[in-house]
Amino acid sequence: MYIKKIVLHNFKSFSSDNSKTEDIEIQFTSGINYLVGNNNVGKTTILNSLDFLTTGGKKENVISKGHEQENVSVTIVIDDVNPLEGSLKKYNPYIENHQLMLKRSSEENTVKQGKDGKEKSVKFDIKKVRIFNFQKKQFENPTGIGNTITDLIDPQIVYADMHNEDYQDFGTTKTTGKLIQTITQDFQASPEFAALKRAHKDAFGVNGIKKYLSDTENNIDEILSNQFGNSKIKFKFGFPNVNDLIKKGNIVSTENGIETDISEKGNGLQRALALAIIQVYSKVSTKDENTQFLIDEPEIYLHPKAQDKLIDSLVNLSENGNQVFITTHSPYILRHYREDNDSIIILSLKKESNQKEINSVNSLLFSPTSIGEVTYRAFGVPNVDLHQLLFTKIYIYWIRNENPDNSCLSAFDDTFLKPECIKQSLSTESFFPRVRGTWKAEQQRTIPYIVRNEIDHPETLADKNKNVWSEDNLKQSIDCLMKIYKELSINRIAD
View 1 (cartoon, one colour):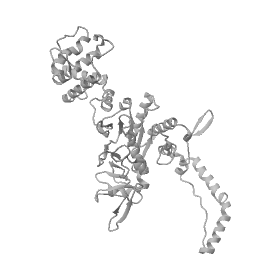
View 2 (view 1 turned 90 degrees about the vertical axis):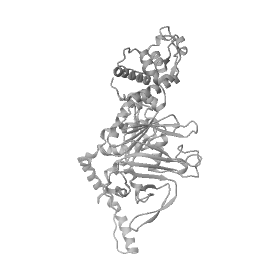
View 3 (view 1 turned 135 degrees about the vertical axis):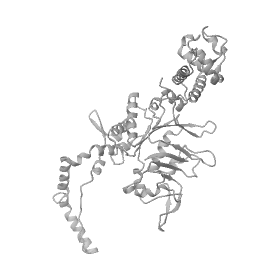
View 4 (view 1 turned 120 degrees about the horizontal axis):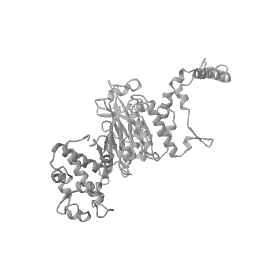
């Protein structure tokens, strides 16, 4: 199972200034979902929305500014859902085409749900998670949904700017608890565990705590007999479930011989600990665990090689059926993008309305992934690496497929680039006075040709400290070359 789509309605910064608020829809893949964009475009808010869906919250903390009189909601579509077992069987009637739809909303209303003439009215508010009934076309709330939702989605979030106390939680739904339980399974069959059970029996049996409670039991029995008839009670202390024992644990940090609870340490150490636990957990995780790992700006506090190791761990988790969400500003992180498994979701603001705009990079031109292309597609930053890669690929294609008599670059520009890039040309007057006399003054050259030559042959510049072309020219050139590359259908040329 994985989250295929999220729909945000008036959630924090995701709203519209129009009188009719438009919902924001974002599509995801089952692998790693990279959320990129400038500051304050809503990357972390998407992580917040999944947190809100599973744990809830107050309307006033999540409603969009200016929409306080309206409702806020977060809806997700879960895909690849097979028939469920155990406590999750109650969801099976709500599955359609292997999909489930969950929603948390501040809207308060009442719906009739149930079957076989046993319908009952159920009131909804922000405290209840709702599930969509595709047959009745309505959201409902089967009994116990709130207790089992984490078996469907279980987001483990590492925020960039706040403490990450959940990673000190040894509970069964938390990453640290899962890690400890996974690697200590054999402990329950060990002599040490058997000795612990015997010690518990001694401590809480008739020769232990029970003998201190016998008088209290007799006193209660006497009162019960006088007031309610003959009855006997006793205090019983069963051996605790091993998960309950583990849940009592905590993590401490030792510095200069002094132990300190990790919750009292700074955000930097807490975040580093959370990421370290995830990396260790990735080595022991098993298939189809169905957890969502949400990492806010993994590049913070990590040098490039450490970033590589973290992403490798997240890739391993995604291959075991876990879904990963990453917010990032780093092209270095994005170079790990895998076209067949992952998605790059670009968040930006529309200049004219200052509203959110969501775009996805569905495919890249180059494989292995070019960091230059990712930088341009994700952040809109033109760069020399992408330009030179495109120019070289197209030039080699021209030589191999058109077998020109003259394969020099000027012939390539005249016969191949100009028909497509004539609008992206610079007149000779704009560049010739600034280069040495090796170029003919009467020629007009395309911007791709000029940019390529100045990059590869800076010695031709009259003013060696300044290029003829600007960043706008570089963008024009890249756009033209990308158009040619796509039209030629020469994606993934090896040489």
